[in-house]
Amino acid sequence: MPKVNCKLVSWDDVMKWCWELAEVIKGSGWMPDMIVAISRGGAVPARLLCDCLCVSDMMSIQVVHWPTAAEVSEKARVKYPLKLDLSGKKVLLVDDIADTGDSLILAKKTLEADCKPAEVRIATMQWISPVCKVKPDYYVDEVKEWIWYQYPWTRLEDIIDFTRRLFKEGGKESWSLEEIAEAFPEWYGLSYEDRWYRTAVEWLVRFGELEKVDGRYRATEKLR
Ligand code: ADP
Image 1 (cartoon, protein in one colour):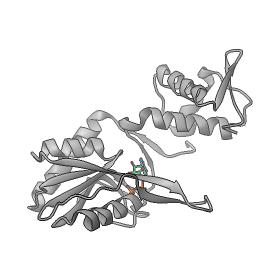
Image 2 (cartoon, helix red, strand yellow):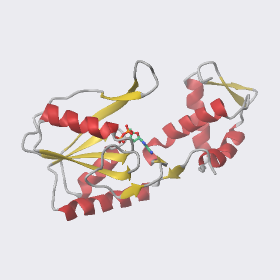
Image 3 (tube, helix red, strand yellow):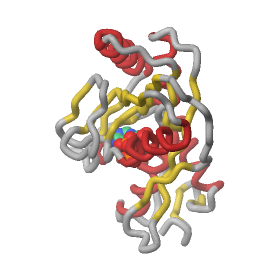
Image 4 (cartoon, rainbow, N blue to C red):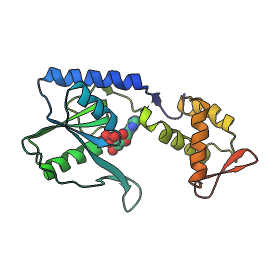
């Protein structure tokens, strides 16, 4: 059993899910005038839904997660608040996945308050029903057990994070690229072409979190 339950998502999966999502939306008899992506995770699905639903108006709202004062939990915030007149418009708010629901709830509330659209509905490809505080109006998969979807738009970002975790929790002083590649299936149930591990490690060196010594990588103070 891997330590983190992950699912590798391909571009074909994304295309298929967005197509299916568009079918569900069309089937409901409701059609949006505009699509708003929750940036950045919703950007690609939102663009594909524009295509599948023949919608030409799209914008995005960026939600970020900042640590609260105690730095125990993180609070969702809108990074660049925007006041626009969307009166009379039916808006479809799109994200890749509904997990905690915090970003969706905040984005919907902000849009309603700042842009006054006629209606906002939510669409996501996945909905993690046991933990999510909101049920999307439209979704493709109801996910009953929490899992990390390794979407293609966070391929490198996730591999960098997964590598950080190996260095923090893997109990080794130093790692070679081969050892990192070997650990991935065991830890995450995922494996990638070598160039991904090499690039992830290069970034971590650039960030000052790893250093290369005698062909092996070691965590610096910054990562420990
Ligand atoms: P949401 O309101 O979408 O549930 P969260 O605040 O829980 O938002 O998560 C923020 C973003 O982090 C999501 O929009 C998604 O891009 C990413 N994310 C969260 N959970 C997962 C997951 N289980 N798998 C992949 N990506 C995730």
